[in-house]
Length: 492
View (cartoon, rainbow, N blue to C red):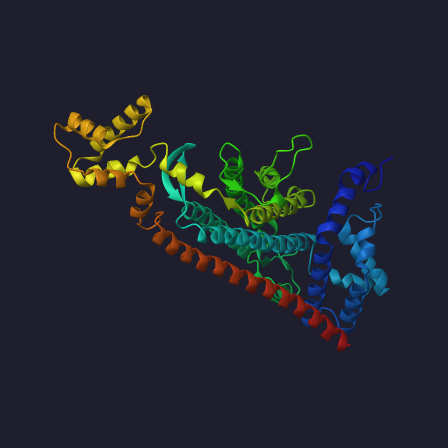
């Protein structure tokens, strides 16, 4: 004898978990969708004023905390039906309560509540990224003249400044914010009214429902409203790009905090002692940044893999079991970015050691080659060869490059005397000079990093203004929905 749906195995392995997830992530959004939809039905004359009032009163009487504590018992299929049953019980007339479901489907409801949840989280992630950008800019503002070595292929390469280094991270983070804002704009469209997939014959007003829920507009094509998943894959793509950046930043600061590098000191509140080794200052906060970011990226990749090559339509692959992974991925992304901001906000740099390293390991000799080109009129390839010979000789003899060594190498390779003076030679090997002459757009010279900082401040302020306006707009739409409910109930 066959079991009645849902069978125990289905209930244990699917419905129970999905019911719990829906309560945790989507309950308030379900209720807001009910409110907005029935208000629109009333305004369009699809339900009577009395029916509208009865349904709205029933929704407002629901005890959200009681619903949240409910355990799945199989008496209804999912949280949607649980809520509809509770509304019907409050109304007392199943026929009236059933009119709430006119001109809609779980298809368009589900896609809408997923967007509502992700919309909130996307703003939280943008907020976290904007704060991280601000931390980088605040630190950069303190270090326009602070020398440090830049690295390529993990080896000391050329002198730069801490400001130049941190501005690179700030710009990266600003681009992450721009990508997330674009994802938010495409996410913030309302699928309600698409119904199962082809809309409805009832004279609904999709723009009104979108307005009540704070969306910028309805989705355009009803088929795509149900079948498309790029509303979350675009967000996850932007999140993945950001997480990769954050992981690279975290790795940098972990290396810099090593005793062997010893060039950054994190605040005491973000390092942890050892249970056995009294000397330890473990940079656990940055380790957790890396771990949480990696966890979030793994979840993103899991989602992308799950939806790859699935059908273009209404399918379970992109719904109950998958959506909580979206929510968890974005939440963990917020955690990683926020923790990095907090840990770095009061970081201190070992300026003397960084300056010494900016003068060591021959990393200023690119400028010496450039000076030879400018002063002697030689091709850069020849100047490079001369300087490479000096570095090789100095390394073998364990001594600094000298002016006499340069004169000899130049004579050997060009059969001519050197015009470059000893003072010009000394200046060419100065890390301060190296940085100061690189004053072109994007370079590390203090005047240029100050200009770049001002540009980035304006970008950051633009992001913050957008964020405030968007938060305010969503708050206003929530208030407007409440006012519309109060007005509808007052008119009864």
